Amino acid sequence: MVAITIDGLSKRFGRMRALTDISLEIQSGEMVALIGASGSGKSTLIRHMAGLECGGGTSGSIAIHGEEMQKDGKLSRNARVLRREIGVVFQQFNLVTRLPVLTNVLIGFLGQISQLRGTFGLFSAEEKQAAMRALARVGIADTARQRASTLSGGQKQRAAIARALVQGARLMLADEPIASLDPASSKRVLEILSGLNKEDGLTVVVALHQVEYARRYCPRAIALKDGQIVYDGPSSALDNTFLKELYGEASEELILPDAPVNDTPVKRPAVAIRSGAPALVTA
Amino acid sequence: MTTQTSGQALEAVPIPPKDLSRSLFNFLVWGVLAAALAWSWAPAEMERFVYLFTDAGNMAEYASGFLKPNFRDLDYYISEMILTVQIAIWGTALAVVAAIPFGILSSNNMMPWYIYQPVRRLMDAFRAINEIVFAVLFVVAVGLGPFAGVMALFIHTTGIFAKLFSEAVEAIDPYPVEGIRATGATKLQEIIFGVIPQVLPLWISYALYRFESNVRSATVLGLVGAGGIGQVMFESIRGFYYAESATILIVVVVTVTLIDLISQQLRKLVI
Image (cartoon, rainbow over the protein chains, first blue to last red):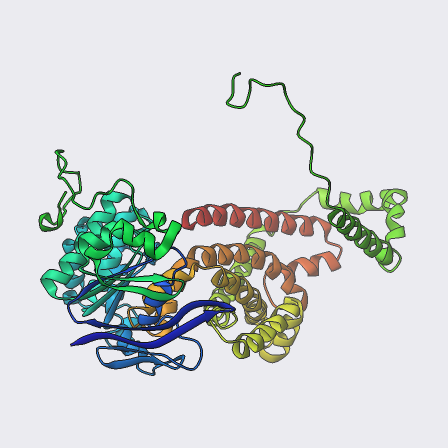
C-alpha cells in the first residue's frame, strides 16, 4: 500500500522557491530519510505532508494512504481527520511545557475521542493506561507527573514520540527530530523511531541533517537540494564522494566528522538512563 | 594581565561615528514632548501652582482637621470597606470570565481580522468609559447600591482584561499549538491545551493586579451611590466631618496595602 504520494508539489515563500515540482511515493512500512543542508526544503516538505502547510500555486497534490491531504494549494476538508493518522515529531518537540508529561501524551488522543470529552480533557482510564504504556515504551514512564519543562531535550523528544504513538498513527513524520539533541539522545530517538518501523510496521519519514544517521537507520534516502529532489534511492549509496558531487562544498554540513558508518561498540558501563526499555538501548 | 591579543603596542580602535539620523530623531522626540507640555500649560492652569506655596496656610488648616481621627464608628467603616472589597471581588471575577473569550477573540494570531477588529473596538469602548460613568448608568438601571458597582467594574475591567489577555495570547510560542494541531485536534482544543496553559500565569497575575486596582476604584464608586465605603467617605467629606473622614482614609489605605501585599505573594506563586 502506498503511504504517501506527492505529485508535482511546489511552494514559494515570497520570492524564494522552497519546493520545486516534488513528486515521490513512499510505500507503507518504509523508513525513509530526507537528507539535505539547511534551507534545502526538508522541513517544508514534512510540513506539507503533515498538512500544516499548503503548497502554493496551481499544481501539486499530496495524498496520505490514498486520501487527498491537499491539492492545488488547498487543504482538503478531510485534513483534520487525516492529521490524526499522522504522528508528527518536531525539531523543537512542540510540547506544552507547562503541562505534565502525561497530559502532553494524552493530547495525542484529541483527534480520536469525542470533541466534547477532548475539549474538557476528560480522558478515560484506558486512555491514561495507553499513554503510560507509550511513555514506558520510550523509557520515560517515571516522568509522567512532571511538567514537560523539567525534561531534558532527549526526554522531551521521547515524550513527543509518545504523544505521536498514542495517536495510533500508521505514518510517523519526524522533522529534524535530533537537530537539537546531544549524540546519545539522538541515537536513542532514532532507535525508537527505527523500532516503531521494524516492530510495528509504521511508515517513518525522518528529515535528517546528518547523512551518517540516515545510512545507519533508513534503508532509503531522498536527498533535497534547493527544494528539488536530487537523489532517491538506497541510503548506502550516499557516500561522502557522492554527497560532494551532489552538494559541493555544502556537503560538509551533512557529514559528522566523528561518526563512522560502521559503529564499533565502545566498552563502557551502560549509560544511566533510568527505567529505559532495555530493548531500545544499544551502544 | 596577559590576553591573547596582547604582545603588540596598543592600537587605537576608532569609535564608529554617531548615526546622525538617530540623534536627529532623539532631538525630535524631546522637542515634541516639550511642545506638548508647553501647549497644555495654560489650559491645565498650571500657573496656579504658586498657590501651593502662597496659600499653604489654608491647606495646613484643612489638613489639621484630619489629624485627629475619630474611631467611634470604626466597626461600621470596616464593614463598609469589606463590602467594597466584595464589590471588587465580584466585579473582577465576572470580568475574568468574560475576558477569556473576548481576549482570545481579539488576538490577531488566533482569529482573522474581521473578528478581532470588531471585538477589539468593542473592548476599546468598554475600556474608554470610566467605571464612574458605568456606575451612573447602572445606578439608573439597577438602582442605588453595590450591584451597580459590581456591574460598573465588570464592564470596564472586561475591556482592560481583554486587551491584556490578548497581548499575552499574541506572545505565545506557536510551536506547541502546532504540535497539538498535528494530532488532529479541533481549534478549540488547540486553544485549551496549547494556548491557555501558556498564558495562564500571566492572566492570573493580571487578574490579581487588577483586583487591587478595582478595590481602589470601588472606593470611588460610592460617589455616585454605588455602595461601599466610598458612599460613606463622600458623605463625611461633604459634611466637613474631618475626624471621621480621616478614619475612613486610614481604613482604605490599610486595606489597599494589605491587598497589595497579599496579591504580590500570590502572584509570586503563579509565575
